[in-house]
Image 1 (tube, helix red, strand yellow):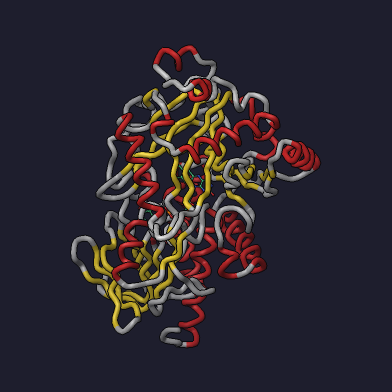
Image 2 (cartoon, rainbow, N blue to C red):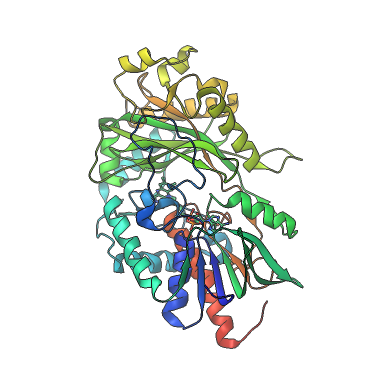
Amino acid sequence: MKSKYDVIIVGGGPAGIFAALELCQTSNMSILLLEKGKDIDSRNCPFIGEGISCPPCSPCDLVSGLGGAGAFSDGKLTLSSEVGGRLKDYIGLERTEELVHYVDSIYLKFGGSNKVYGNGEEVEELARRASLADLRLIPMTVRHLGTERSRAVLHGIRDFLSSRVDIKLGTAARTILTENGVVKGIETKDGERIECRYLIIAPGREGADWLVREASRLKLTLKINPIDVGVRVEVAEAVLRELTSALYECKLEYYSKAFDDRVRTFCMCPAGEVTMESTGGSDPVTTVNGHSYADRKTKNTNFALLVSTTFTEPFHDPIAYGRYLAHLANLLSGGVIVQRFGDLMEGRRSTKERIERGIVQPTLKSATPGDLSFVLPYRYLKNIIEMLGAMDRLAPGVASRHTLLYGIEVKFYSSRLALTESLESEIGNMFAGGDGAGVSRGLIQASASGVVAAREILKRLSRNIPSS
Ligand SMILES: Cc1cc2nc3c(=O)[nH]c(=O)nc-3n(C[C@H](O)[C@H](O)[C@H](O)COP(=O)(O)OP(=O)(O)OC[C@H]3O[C@@H](n4cnc5c(N)ncnc54)[C@H](O)[C@@H]3O)c2cc1C
């Protein structure tokens, strides 16, 4: 590792690696990719499938390391400007759509599959039936890579980059160095100072807290996103088969009667497993997520039900709020709570015996049977119960008393850095992208945001513009 680079990229997730790909394909500048986690193959969660509670680890191998948060996922590439982020708010619809196709073509080049879901008459019919149930089926096509292919694509990208970019693993960026409003470099956690002309910050949700702290120290404007809090729902695979075989990932949206809040399905995992993850660095919290594996099918399908809300003034720290709720679930259960929907509706906790009697058996064995009403405020529970009822009209069985709810699922992409249309921050030559900056919420738009920053840097270098 040198002490000076043209570009430093913080974070080796899709935003960071697509920025690196774009930069190194068209120029021979010096680039450093800093990633606090491990290399792809060294990432390993020792607790998956062990039936024990998440300890939690810091950093968590599931969400940290080369490849980023989705490296263990089954790689659903959402080919839409509407879903998976708000990139279009920065760069406009047309450019977003062009970039969605561009990054998709790169995933294909590195071995992405040709299988695309979400087209055809069958989908139109499902959309019609959804509307009769008070739901909106959000149209989108999904390229499904599958876990193994996802890893193979990441290996291909890593091998391509490793001869062109300095990749420094196990190294967290601690301090952003600036001078007169222009970026100067990075200081690592070990106190090493590395200079750069351009900086791209892409720390993902895992690094969102760090980014907020740095942004506050540097007095950068932070905008508040609605916070997404909810549960992971697990049903028998047959209940959602009609939807998942046509759409793979089914995005449904509902506005609750009680609060007019937006409730939506997120990250549907057909025949998948519910998992735990920990986020938050030195003060981690354990939350729920889900995966599907190509070689390990289960009898269940899981998906998140997330409620988006904005808060009343003067409160402006939605990340702290989400962490507080997650801590509460951790406090009551030692990790994650699981409850049968029927028990929730009866006003009683689930017990080990009640869960064992159920038709749907939990794929996350280490979840503690309990009562989510001790954790989730009325507003969230009410919204979730309403949405399950609406989904049950589209796919009977979703609101069965055997349906399992795991809590809690929180998406920590709540604070957004003020960024220009080229994703430059209020610090000159410092760009930010991906989930951590609040720009994206999925692989495709995270990747696209890295390309946006990289293209602007290339443009400046070719014109030799020092900063905006
Ligand atoms: C289990 C799971 C399944 C998912 N499945 C899908 C899916 O199928 N389809 C989809 O579209 N999306 C999926 N996602 C979401 C997707 O993974 C993210 O939207 C995407 O990875 C965001 O990319 P990113 O580059 O912004 O951040 P990340 O992928 O989170 O990468 C950020 C990286 O930065 C590193 N980092 C953080 N702070 C620092 C620091 N200070 N210094 C150095 N490094 C740092 C982190 O270790 C991390 O590796 C999934 C996410 C999870 C957790």
